[in-house]
Image (cartoon, rainbow, N blue to C red; front, side, top):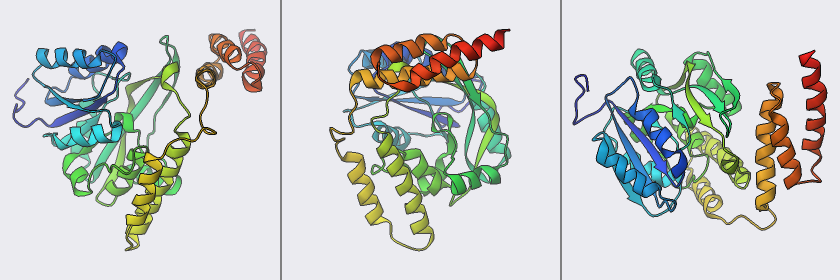
Length: 323
């Protein structure tokens, strides 16, 4: 491993795994194939039921850099807490099942953190990939740590959790992830991390976000938004010298509360929204493959007007662009 210290890797990659067996191999291999080799990969099996557990055991047997942990299904936040508690690296890097880190991701992010000692967490540019490998767009921010940190404070725009790498000592100094935030755990962590340093971002595409129809859901959107607001409220409270225990109690109640029947969507409605989202991304890019997704959204939810409007405009818009 090119002189890396086996007993203390520079990077601990932490990945919570709940199912996703069909996408697991590509995700794990994207980490194992990194140009930066001084890392450990901590896989936390969050009570998987689709064969992912067996695959994780195989991975751990085949590569000594892999550390495999298990827990009953408790959600991503608890899986991350467990994984980060076992992390031995100077830096902790996030990874999700279904996404891919490009080969120089860790190399570039470690270099950035080495060159910016005042930065405690760094993100990177992200490319969005559809279910059939379609290009859905990409996001890159070329901004200073001061600008990126201020964007969190002014507009609630932090770095992408899916491709974040942060300093272990800073993570532990601020208390790490908090169980009260089952969702928006990243927003809560970023607000506490900026009390000890800045956020940064490598202005390059180092990550591919795999967007799958079954993986898009609006069920927890309201709770995500409410918890993000409470994360910001907690930050302001503590910064002004207050006690945020009541805010944390409210966050826990929202995290653990059941979604009411009026908030629940039928499976077909959820899939329709997912198909529409992917179709809309392709539509913006002028890709005629948008029509297949929009038509599936219509078949699942015939009286929803938005996909009807967009598919009509897709023929007018794309036809005019091709002239």
